[in-house]
Amino acid sequence: MTGDEDLPPSEEEADAMNVDAALSALIARIDPMPPEVARYAVAAFAFRSDGEDFADLEWDSLTDAEVLTRGPDDVRMLVFGPAGPDGIRVHLGLSRTATGFEVDGFVEPAGHTEAELLHDGGAVRRPIDTAGRFYSDLPIVRSIRLRLRGTGSAPIVTGWVALG
Image (cartoon, rainbow, N blue to C red):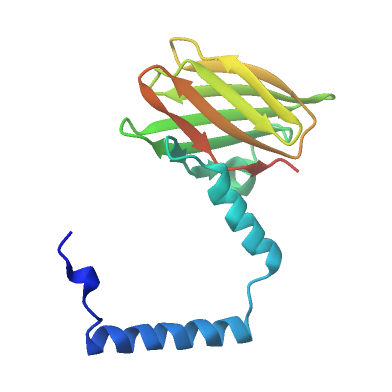
């Protein structure tokens, strides 16, 4: 702490704060944030805990036009990461079945011991083998999120992904 936080803002800082406040008010009047967006934003921050590292969705075969022309229509590939100090990446293959989804997961580098697949109906926990692989069956669900746990490392979590 420098003690500067107790000093009044300089004239330049005060002008910048006034401009920021005016712009915020103008945007709120012209293009207000829909209430559901505010609810989703608050829920996203509330769901994440301080002790977790977040793995962003890097790639989704559903949105890659080249991939859509190859392979069966009922398989979707997702890649999350990098996360944590080791740059963890998670590869998920989701195959649609008559009763839900088959999940084929790969964590690199290996080291986490459990994958928890959270979905809109609950959660499924599966062990991760020493090569970083895990498998699971899921019921028909609308969305999923993954949480990886391991010994000596912070949990890795992904955002929610809509499955359709």
